[in-house]
Image 1 (cartoon, rainbow, N blue to C red):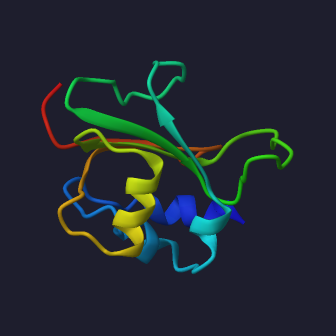
Image 2: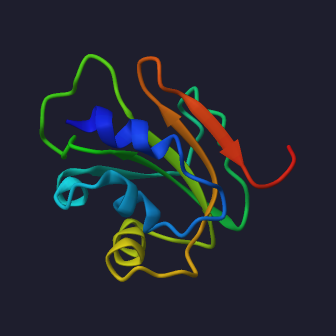
Length: 121
């Protein structure tokens, strides 16, 4: 169920409001079934780096806590400015907050990976 959502997220633009994840998913239930994790230590192979003043999250649509782990993961790692928590992310999406924007992201999955960032590295 996550493949169409993750493929749509490849078209995200950096600087877009976070709620664009919801608009592009075109599935009203994805967020309630998503596993959202705040990343505090670089443990994956994605290219989004941790840095002061930003929060990094990993989102797996349709992979809730307690569900069996799939053979391969499909999702997005994204960076937003500020010290945010998981509830802040959900609120920003539900309330369509224009002030919470995507600074950098890495969509990952079997054959669908893409990385975009707003600043030079």
